[in-house]
Image (cartoon, rainbow over all chains, first blue to last red; front, side, top):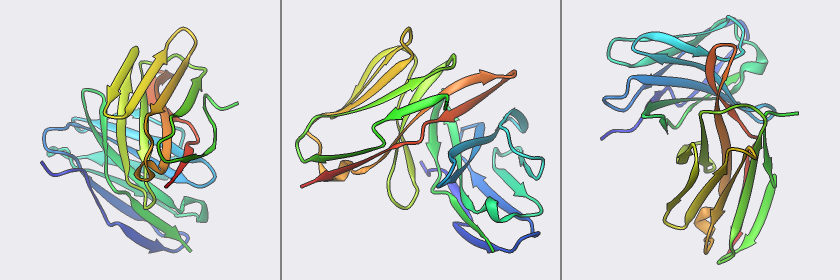
Length: 110
Length: 111
């Protein structure tokens, strides 16, 4: 069974641009959650989607958004990028509460 | 004060030693997770606990709901156990369930 796949793995953007990250969960998993990891703040929960609906949301500004498609693949979007958005963005799919993480997308904002 | 506190922050051990990493939390939880992160970023879920004790190979995780405390033990540690170990709790806040993470414990096991 393939694991959780995140694309792209690395990307560089400049301030003010927007970015879209993609996450393909393990087949059969309907829950996808997103996390931001920075050296200063550690891991922080962004949001969770289940069957195309946002089920839970962390404390991030509205510039951070996401969606989930009918095949459970999920995307997250960050608009008007700021330097502080530089981070590793991780997604996880879950089944029965157990989490399976992707390798992450490392975003650098210049 | 963070809702999830881990100790120690850094831990260096010799191969073969018994290791304990502690996690305390201050919120009500539905589950507690122990995660392992190697350099490069990939995270692996080691355990999900809501009560009692779980064992997988050389790893043991325990949780005491009344004391709001969990421990991760590694027996007969090996250099390949070197990683950051992260405790996370599933907590419902403001009607929304989310994972709250500790800052992690960086473990280095020397041969």
